Image 1: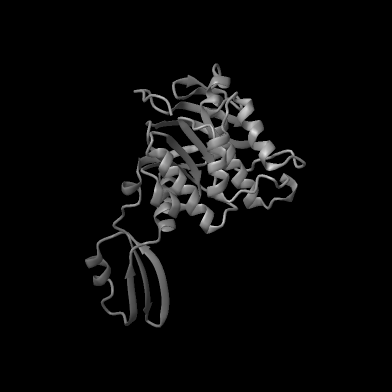
Image 2: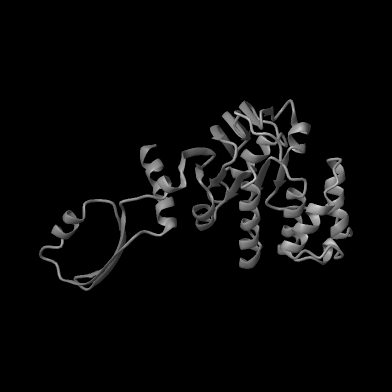
Length: 284
């Protein structure tokens, strides 16, 4: 798995990538320490994939810098890619090739014998190595992509929306593998818009909005809130809202009203996440 280093696994500073009129990323900075399971959280179109492609040197950028495992994304791209297990959100393979040929090709491109690890991964993920790519469903192609990214036991995994298309059983097995590799020192950078999996498996996370990082913190801190989800029937009218203030003030405001029913609950994870977006918009 390689030796540990004091350098961070990922270091991005002031990254800016413009696509003309299309949104890219703007002055984005991010640090991921080695050995972490780090969530990169945001809705589709927020800039997650663009950030990852810049980080891996797959696309150029106008300003800033990006480094992976101490290697510069622009000047050391080939060495960087050999040291990383990257899984794009949509993996494309030669349709006529068999699964075992695709997996072996990925290993040969790194000049490595990965047969033992690949066999283990195929068994765990229920991948049929004799199938042709064109015969596979989206979920099974996704599993082939996971094997290709993991089989060489890199120091860092970078996964872009890895669980989309996987059934719940395979999602659970995928994260079980992540935790096993992580216990041996592997860092995982996980881009996702699926909030529950970030909360369950990641230790730190960054929230990205419109190409900029809104905040970075531990997942525990990011999901901690004093807000309450209020559902009630007041004066014959149903109300459903997120309340951030003092509950005494809320109850005081009920004076003179007829409250037929009220439920006070912890907010859903999606509601907590949306607070970061709303608060950012209000400050702009």
